[in-house]
Every structure is written in C-alpha cells, then in structure tokens.
View 1 (cartoon, one colour):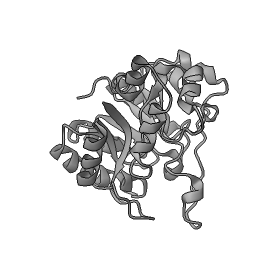
View 2: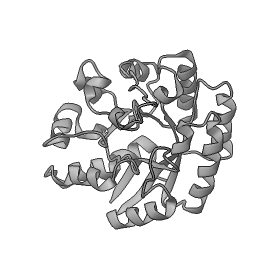
View 3: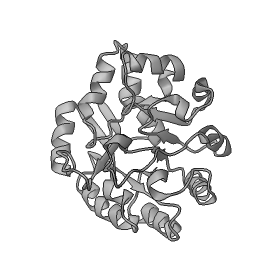
View 4: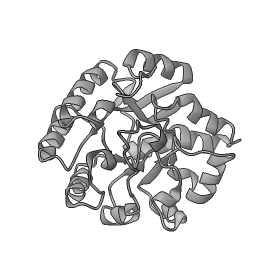
Amino acid sequence: MFVDINVSLGNWPFAKLKYDNSSNLIKLMNTMDISKSCVAAIEGIFYKDVQSANRYLHKIVKKHKKKFLLFSIINPAFPGWKKDMDECVTTLKTTGVRLFPGYHGYNITDKCCLELLSKLQKLNIPVQIAPRIYDIRMHPSNFIIPDSNIKAIPQILKTFPKLRVCIINLKTLNEAFENVKTIRHLKNCFIDISFVEGVNCINNLIKTAGVDRIVFGSNTPLFISLSAAYKLKESNLNKQQFDKIAWQNAENFLGKVQ
C-alpha cells in the first residue's frame, strides 16, 4: 500500500497530461495500490486568484473522499490570503497547504510567509513547500521559473517546532540543509522522493536523512507514480523500511490519514 503525498490535478498549461483528471488518476491509483493521494490544483500555481482553483478542486475531492486529500495552494504574497486560508479551513476542510514560493514571487523567510506558517502551526495543519514543480529545462523558453532558495528550512523548523513540514520535489538535501544530517533531528520535517535520482538513491537517502524522514511522493501527473514506486522496489528495503516510506511516515506528516 502507498500514500502519495505529492499529486496535482488540473490543467498544466504547457502540455496535455494523461493523469491530470480524477478518473484517470483513480484508475492509476487502483493499479498501483495507492490508497490515498494528497492533491492540489495545478492551476493554482498560475491563477492570480488561487482560491478559485482550490474551490474547484474541493468539489472533486468531495466526490472521492476515500481517495483524495485536499491540499490547498495558498499564496501569502496575495493580499487576500488570510481570507482564503480561513475559507480553506472552515468551508473546504483542507487537509494541508502546498506552497510554491518561486511561482508566486516570495521567499520563505518573507514576513507574509512566516505569518502563514505561524497560522498553520496554530491550526495544526501540515504544509508542503516546493522549491520547484518541474525541471527548469522543461519550462517553455519564455516562462522560466528559477528554483526557490529554501536554505532557511532549518530555521523555519526551529521557529515553528510544532509545524509539520514536507519538502516536495527536492533534488538533494543540500538544497535545504547546510549540514544534511541535521534533518535526522527535525522530527516534524519530511522529504518526498519524487525528484531523487541515481543508483541506490533511496538507500543513500536513508543513510543520510534516516528512514523516518522519507515519504512516498510521485509528482504525478508531471512525473509518473510508477517511477517513484520503482525507486523503492529496487532498493532492497526490509518490510519495516518499505512500510515507513510507502505510507507510515505520510501518516505522521498528515497527523492521520482521514
């Protein structure tokens, strides 16, 4: 069984993607024994009014409660983000929040972002931070979005010790940690495996970060979930290690899979 913490639904503006709709995604999930997917509205990355994308996805999630968990995209650089956040909690019943600093033009150390993180800690809502959503080489030449600087993650976690944070689409631990083994001591910090590459990449990640910090995330539909699954299966993990990464650590990040 898998819990996929990194999935998007909706229209990617630069290409038609096979699993960008709920029907095809559910078929894929059933084929791969993925019990739950944390989904965000991919259009929310591009809309000025992010909340319209969150509302639309909420209607889809509501029809498939057993399969999908809503992760609302919030843009703290947008003046109305507090109102959006309140609606996400009270009306949309969001499970978590997903942030794209690069696409929305802020740094994770900016006052607006820190205010949002403080609010999420008080509400006990987990947050995902994405330094990228796609390899920069795959962007259209007239729409290049640089990767976000997330070196302040350790300080963020120190400032908000009860906030559950998952870094998604992380290529290397060095992007977020000056000392990569720091993550072992940050019990509320998790990383997904969607962008991790190389021979024995999962085993190497376990040696550095510890098995308790790694979660299964595929970045579907921009990537294919089969790729993330093969990373685990090629790693010769024992059952305890496999279960932790496949679904147990996700439960710790989410609080519980509803």
